[in-house]
Amino acid sequence: MRLLAFTFISSLLMALTGCAVTPGMTRDQVLSSWGHPTKELDRDGLHRMQYSRQPMGQSVVMVDLDTAGRVVQSHEAMGPGDFSKIDVSGTSTQADILWALGPPAKIDGVMSWKGDIWSYRWKDTQDMWFWVYFDPSGVVRRTQQGPDVGNFRLLR
Image (tube, rainbow, N blue to C red; front, side, top):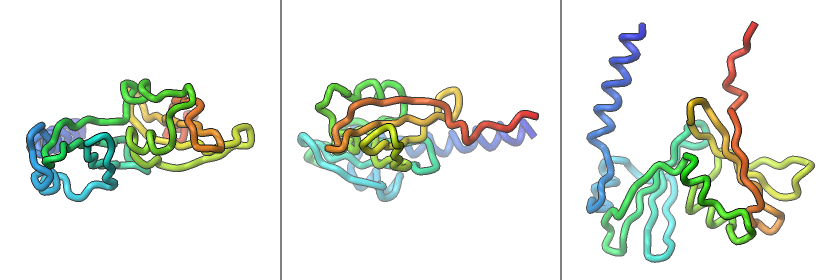
């Protein structure tokens, strides 16, 4: 069974390698390889194509294009490096989070917090959640991460 799984994963990785987005590619080449993005945004002279696997997946790939429609960079947005860039001092808004992470897997609320809480799935050494807490005016006030306890196996 392990050999079968290893073979499947190896084949999948080899197939995905051929679909890598590299700097200089045209928008049409990206669309040809990856299909239509889940969301497209413009900001500061960049056009961002977001390929999100949320709400059930754990990946969000950002592809940034310049004004000529060529790829400047692409990167996976679901990880500690991107999470640490989120400013909780009162300047980041929902639009900033949509730009950085894409649409959330879900939007929650709890009695002890007056604003929305955006939830994102991601993968570390285990299945994880990343939460962004907004105040009622839509400004980021805190972030938090933790394990996806819904995926834990029950031990008997």
